[in-house]
Length: 183
Image 1 (cartoon, helix red, strand yellow):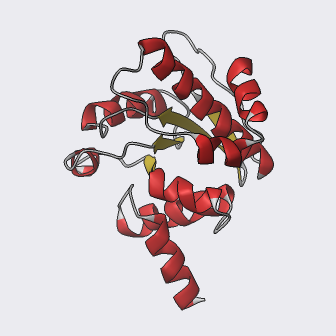
Image 2 (cartoon, rainbow, N blue to C red; image 1 turned 90 degrees about the vertical axis):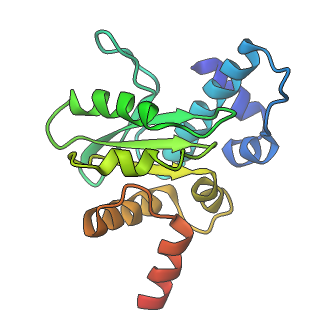
């Protein structure tokens, strides 16, 4: 992970890294895709660190890999970072949910996907299951990059929306509009 964090630092910080990051061409090699994924994790680590969330980078408990964890408001959250060419299907969310479910009761996972989610993924995630994931997409991350909101406050807003309306994927832009109107 240190190479990824060095790449983010070389870009001038996480905001500049995100500004310069782009979609990979269809001819991108597997190594180029893996590098961007690791750099995405590194940029998130720097974003979390800037907001005082005490991030822990990728680690490997027995039999699995966790992209990282953060500390917010007295509890630990696991996170997954994905930047692929296609929207993530329900199976990607279930795989991460399995990691979260295997941790201390009450653990919540934050899934960051720069490529979004398939149309059925969110519905499948909440169908008759305990909800313990909160989802972020590119539009959500862009609001943090543009300084419209800090990542800690973004997580809090999304957690509240998930708790109040049982939706793991409330658009951050809509939540900000609601917050300003009610506020």
